[in-house]
Image (cartoon, rainbow, N blue to C red; front, side, top):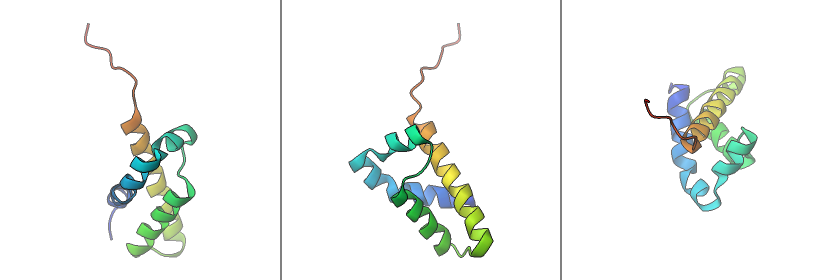
Length: 84
């Protein structure tokens, strides 16, 4: 079975076009959670990977957290300080 990171990467890949059209990443960063369509995609990807029952719910939570964290990290626009 794929790892949570692999599933999160798959969700990011599948949702990228939709996010580019609607700028969904702003909403994800502001709320620190996925929208309904994104959550549905996470559930779909986890189910397709063969997870079921309690293991599926745990994996959905884990993958969702990874996706949110990745989106927030990619949106990070805080300037870095140079070595002074």
